Image (cartoon, rainbow over all chains, first blue to last red; front, side, top):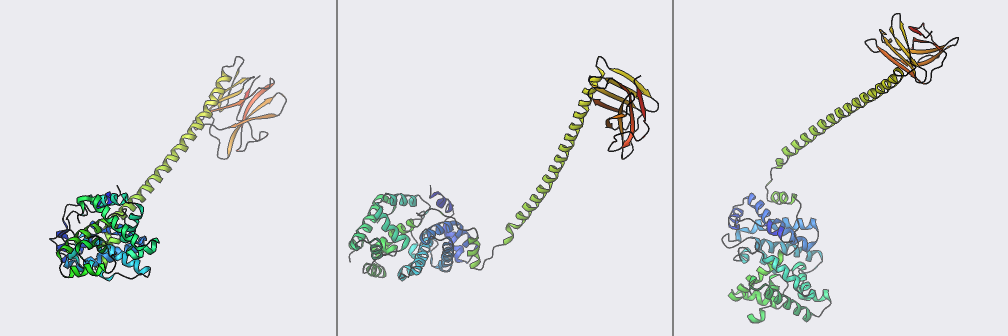
Length: 195
Length: 240
């Protein structure tokens, strides 16, 4: 049920293609529609990472500005713009966390999210299907330490070495947990995400 | 590294937490346009995107949308809510005025009804007392009439009832006062009353009546009444 608002927020039969074309024509109303479609989703993700509403709103604004400024590189005919926008949102938030805690920034990761073409060709309904709900359910089924390493990686942007330090575990153990957690997740999800 | 060795690393690379030298290895494959790595990375990015929608839903401030549009130089028209707000304010003021007026009217009506009920209760009590006197088996009836005309009824166990006609309302600041007078004694005050605009008046002095009562009289006195008559009686009813 927790996913319902998110899914409702991004409902709407209109594909992103037309929206992307209007963004590329610098139609500000299209930016408003993009926000209506993905704003809550981006905010929820960023808030989960930074855990402060004011900072989260600032980062959501940065995210939409970045998408607005780089949307020319997105192929309107190749899938939804949502996955790229969420990648930008997460990277903005992780970048903030790293800066705030004095950790090294992962420059390549941010360069990558600056290339929207890498996020084309994804399944068109990736965000509007129940896959996200199934991912969450699969996460809940993981052992606590496996779930923790995935959350530390995704929501705190910790490398495996940093996770090992944080958890006080040998690096090899953490790597095993990460690998096992991801394998369990993919096995549980079956055809949802193939690898 | 082979693709098999990299198999578990694409997901970590996709969320930016792969360690060296794996990171450089994948980066090199991608830079060379390695199709296998590009395919695996697409799947890894899809999983990463799905992680992104797993947090519980939260709602940003309604102002955020306007902030974002303003940051690209697009000012939304701000008066969208203004007419509705104005209308709502006007309706609220009207409703407050209307209901306060109605409430005041209801309060006045309630006060008037209470006063009317109080007067009717008094009149009903008077009528009951008058009926008791009139229906007493030993009630004495005495006529009077020089100017104001009427009758006095005396029931020695219940009291004295005075019914008068042609008794004009007392002037402002004045009132009628009834007196009961024993033979050879000073007048005793027996209550204050006012007559109606048509000249009729009814006054009752309840309680046991002195068996030696000789005269019932009425004088015009100051509004507070008097301990002894200060004016000549307007009417006098003699029992003997």
